[in-house]
Length: 404
Image (cartoon, rainbow, N blue to C red; front, side):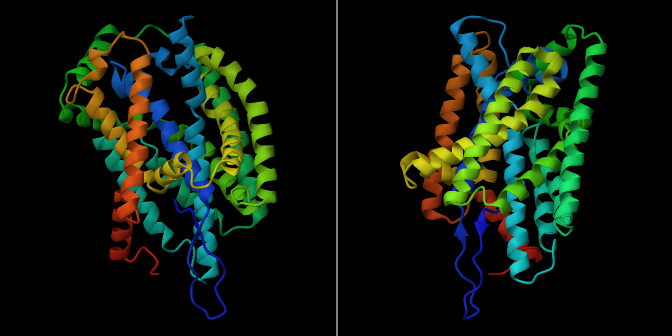
């Protein structure tokens, strides 16, 4: 996703230097750390990434323990679950709006070269799903991006109609699925199935895990399928926010961020808390209805913090660097967690099983620090992240990237 906004052409007709929107980079970096805060619980589970398929308790965000560690785990999981999936989708939509704006100013056909970007993202997501992590988001974003790219050629009224129709349809669909799941008694996990999956992720080899993902591709790809309407709505929210100036510096942008923080957190957090306390029965409403509302509040809150922090402070600069290399950071965090937690690597999930949430929080903090420092050092020598550069090279070679 591009966060570069192009200024109008200079009188000489020369293309001006691109002007980045600093807040978008910080938000993208924050979203990468947030997705890790959600996914780290899958990597550290003895059932691995297959846990949501066989254990309903893996879907809950509230720990049954009233101890200090249980409360800390509940708060950590509550703050992350579903919010950053939605945040990334909004940011993808915002980046799409920027690319459309740049193409329009240059008089280029749309979606034009964006089709190549979407195809690259789809292929990359398929490889990431097969080789690294079952719950990849890139494939779903690639398909959604194609739909929204076409919608950008339609009128604003048409996009608004699609946005609200998709949002209402999604809420009704999640409510229906929640009712249907509640009507079916949920039994305990099959001990033999759970034992087999535990052995796969704590002692199995890497090729066996790849084959498991391929054999269970439909079940493991179910999230972007059942939430497609949500993704379309969130992409369009990102488009609308970008065009309204929500990510831009200045007084108007700050006023929008204040409203987003107040409404998103004020309405979203109580709703999200209620659905979280409902346990696994309300998981769909918790992750896919309440959490996206909170994500809008997160955008406003992070924006307000960035407005008040030094633009080039150490923390802001590090998160911004991660945001500029977000695609590489997203894949790398999953590679690192696989090597650290699964049986073909260090096997920490098995070694630390039953030791409480503290080591999980430490793992998240350690990998996050590595990503922040690594991306900052990388950008001192290179202009783009590793995967970002691969994308640019492939698109340039195939004619799917604009020449500058």
